Image (cartoon, rainbow, N blue to C red):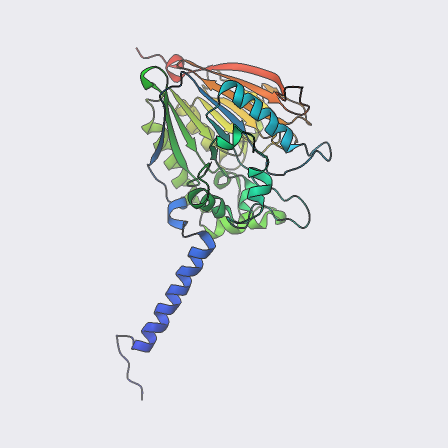
Length: 373
């Protein structure tokens, strides 16, 4: 007859402790010990100050991680886009790059989507060795994840940012920045960086070729309706808290132009941007350069800059767009009352490697849209 006890024997205690240790070690090794920080919502704001800047100049690029050399109509030279970016950044003294995702593609049948770890050779081959000119190698890349980044180890990109190279700025899937510049540092731009994969994909209908994305959404618990509600609420709270900003920019991967905004939970995201008078939304995913202007019904300007190394088809409902086969990016300059922008076609470079300005425009600050009485 065996005697039972409410307390575990020492041997059982050690076995349980060992199992718990191994389990925690697995999580730490697999995800860099980052699970709490990257998935929890936070009210932290990463503050930047530019005391000597009368304006804030930046570039927007997306869907760039292929290292292609222009092998066909669909795949262009990532290096060409980099050269044009260097020219514009030098000419205008750009301060940073906004990166709207799809950072690392599968380049061949022997390659993998995304990256596997902080030591993946793609960091050198696709990012550091391509955007390596004098100016670009100094600029921070304020990053969000695209769907291709989710196919393998999206947390490795965050871990790389936190432990290897902070210039690839990616502290979490959702984070907020604040930029102060201009006369007496009074002009304030707020940047809300979000992961739109949570709102775009339904795990029950994801294609077989995207199984890695589905698995990750399931494993991280980001597929549930509660998770979606929590993220939307987090976005809403950040927009409410920053209504004093002269500009509010939201950065995601999936576009919100026309018919492209009607997928899954994207309409709810669009409604938040319009309700809280966001200045502009920057996205990629569709491998095009496209724009939809603000209207009297919506103050939001919608940009697609997804032509960093691939081209494809755009969104029905745009006001302007380049045809398939165009590679390039967006260049923008924020001043106290307006933001000027231009789309740069880097498909064929001129002698100065500047690319060609194919469309430009201006949007107003939030105070100009809604003057205070």
